[in-house]
Amino acid sequence: MAYLRNLDHGDIVHRCFRCGYCKFPADYSDFNCPSYKAFGWDTFAPGGRMWLIRAWLSGEIETSPRFTEIMYSCVACDNCKNQCVFEKFRDFLPDVFQETKAELVSDGLIPPSVRDYFKAIAISGNPYKLPQAQRGKWAEATGLQKYSGQEYLFYAGCVGSYDEVGQKMAKSVGDILVKAGVSIGILGDEETCDGNEVRIMGEMGLFAELAQANIEKFKTKGVKKIITLDPHALNTFKNDYPKLGASFKISHYTEIFADLIKKKKIKFKKYPAKITYHDPCYLGRHNQIYNPPREILRAIPGVEFIEMRRNGLNAFCCGGGGGNFFTDILGTGEDSAGRVRVREALETGASVIAVACPVCAKMLTDAVKMENLEDRLEVLGIGEIIARTQKK
Ligand code: SF4
Ligand code: SF4
Image 1 (cartoon, rainbow, N blue to C red):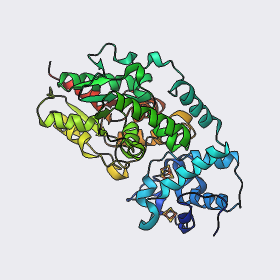
Image 2 (image 1 turned 45 degrees about the horizontal axis):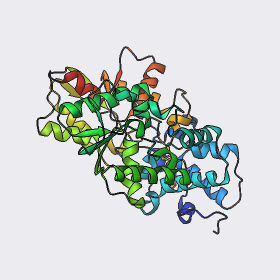
Image 3 (image 1 turned 45 degrees about the vertical axis):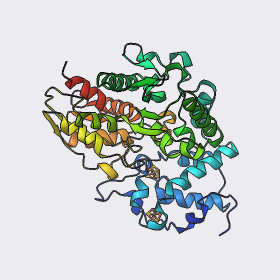
Image 4 (image 1 turned 90 degrees about the vertical axis):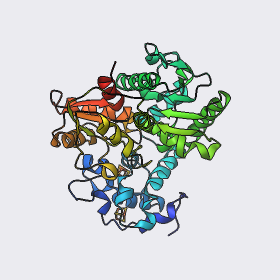
């Protein structure tokens, strides 16, 4: 079939026959697409989305506010990629969804919340529209120094720099790295958005500007290795920036912590707690980093580590990916991803949900409040858990 629009992966769209397998996790226990779970219409599920895109590409349907809302309700969690029955094309499902968003951006037909997000990043360098001078404030009471040739650049990202929940995570991680003797520095008020969400939501021009400016800045400062707080930043630094000439070594802080624990540079007091772990999509499915956070939690004496029913490759998203953290297209209803996920955490009997991503931290913290579970479940960054257990 000839299409009116030319997506890089448009030639696979017609192969989806809407069997619906991509909607379910391996054990068929629930729906695994956060967008479908929240809205319940087949057009919000991966297969229905593919058919809508096919009709749109061939001119059977026109771009409409409803169509753009459905496209931007995809949180880029990659769960469908692992469940689609067609091995030959399932790897490209997320590309089709991302390329469709990029087409909508080119046409100037995007939801208002997405447009506002891009505008904030373009004008302020962060989605909160806060001054650049405020970006490094979170680090003032820590021992963190400005980057000046240290072994690692510690990149906090927009959520770690400006959001209260994210700042707590950034502080605890920075403190632990400094105490463990890791040579790190931060960019503070010179840091700017990494662009992961800008790219996934399809603003390719703005993404290229952000990425090129960041690469240039890192190179000028002599950065060779980067530790990220946020798996979203890790994802774009690792998978997108090299296509634009970057060659930095990128690690997530949990990988560095796991290594420091093996070298006995992080020590713990006993911490008696039942803890479960929520895999961030951008650490797990997008970058196959599943073990380091688990190794850390299992190394803490007194911790009883319990997996959630859906974990690792099958973990259910918190709903914060694909820019939904900022655009809130999925909303906060009973079947919104974060609320589903905290109910799943509760089933384990754990009192703590350990998180490795500031976006997950905020989404799940809000969901715990909405579910009225504040007296039963606490959401803590892995750095915050370690901080509670460290020997003086
Ligand atoms: S994306 Fe794959 S699993 Fe989902 S409906 Fe289409 S063919 Fe079936
Ligand atoms: S990437 Fe996630 S949210 Fe998007 S269609 Fe696939 S399962 Fe649904």
